Length: 391
Ligand code: PMP
Image 1: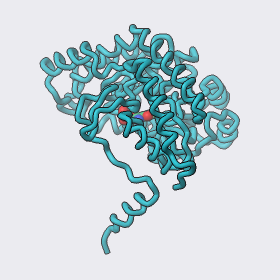
Image 2: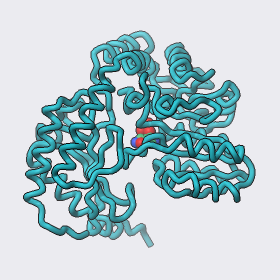
Image 3: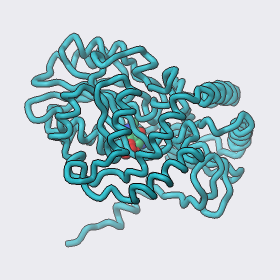
Image 4: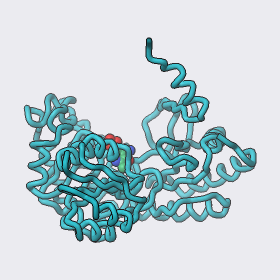
């Protein structure tokens, strides 16, 4: 008896769900070379265009010279160095919270925070469209796990009625595949009425939302009483890598003691923390990046609406075009690629069945001309597509 991997792979191919990794042969950015082809890309999460910023690169290079390339050990052994510490202080100040804890990735931050806060005998309630890392964290925690209807405080309230033990309500800030915002004021009020804590993963909100890029919490003017556990990732708007959890002194000390993905992993390279200190300053101070992004979002939505394509209710740089079948999403993505434009098709199981989409992401490094090219290419791609493409 052996593992029948080939049938499993064949089934995936037959369902148009086989995934491939494009090979990037240039630095990532708005213009990239992928598998030998020069492309204008609309699929990076580097929303503010900071990943290639000269000041961020300089800080990284200087950091590597001074601190070396590797973290060397876990934080609790001897991997917690001065740049990590400075970045944690800067992130705490940025989020207006007493403390912040640096994590090596957003995936680990979510697993770490959830599993340190709830376990057997507790309850975790999550939006059904939350990111996979949050859903995995819920399963791993051993707490009673239930998913409420997307962004629906009434559905949350009915689940809160049945909650036992410590109850954690978890939501994406900006939903990663739809681009819409969590209705935090209502969700937080609903949770608070039942003494539940709210945890927000604002991976896609930091840098893009709020006057100073403070994300969804700044956008809605909420505080630590509303959202005691706030997660940000650094590989998106910040343009670097890693993640952080911000909250009270006690929360952070609890995570240092109990969050296994914090305790049992090597710290991120200190040079990355040096780079993030530089990108944080740009993210906060260069308001023009957010303003320009907003203009591009408006331009894109108007252009796509004119083509009769279906957009989602998204005010963020994540602007999915709802296509329906996986085959149609792949065909559209291929037709764009023939015209030198890279937009990835997102298919189940990443999104619900029948809601395959082109996930367009806009970035402050795009120009109005770039967005114009994308719209023209979409128009052309539509003329080449068969009327109905079924899975
Ligand atoms: N949360 C959300 C909402 C995300 O979209 C992602 C990454 N796509 C993560 C967490 C994971 O972050 P990281 O890439 O730093 O592991």
